[in-house]
Image (cartoon, rainbow, N blue to C red; front, top):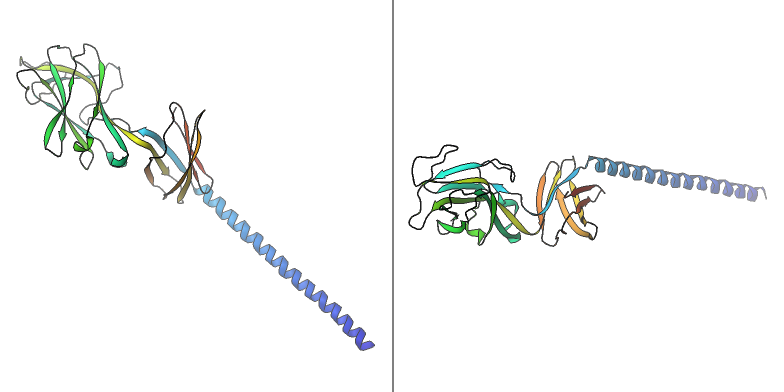
Length: 284
């Protein structure tokens, strides 16, 4: 009986030891998981704080590209350049179209804001055709006694833009008898030649119209950003689009989405990363 009692006591003691050991193992596993989860959360929070994205631009058309040798002015500001010419006056526009893939370009428009005080002058605009190596007639400018804007769409724009994005225009005065010859450029002092005519030029530029929406995004943070969704909102529209865009630290990218059309009027665009950070752009 003593042996049986002792064995029974030993079993109870062994059971208690096993319970303690299992409890310690369970506590160790739980504590390890808590520590690992805490580390993962701290890592996630740290990466989220290091991530900083900016939505710089959202548009369906480019900004105006203006002549390199002509100072851009605001509309109707009273500042203009008077050109005296008895020959073509060449205007070179540096239009960096590398951010606008050809598949997404709907058209290119040109706008001229000018005044012609000499009603007998016939001014025309031409663009250099890189395929035929000659100038093509684009438009004849009507005579305006006060400043007005004249807009023309450049058909077959691929024929006029070089691989480096340069478009060369030629603005010149002509009449029914002759094309009046190379340019003399002066400001404020009319030339002495009787066949020279003047045009007051306030603005000349080109703009790209897109089939889709351009997004310009910058990652100024210290970690790679992964954009997973795009939102376009206004009082009527509230749409979410899937995205899969990676941006390295310090990188600025431009991307065009042909499936996203911007609503008319005011809108708000948002891009969201996989870490939950949001960048906002409002076209106000």
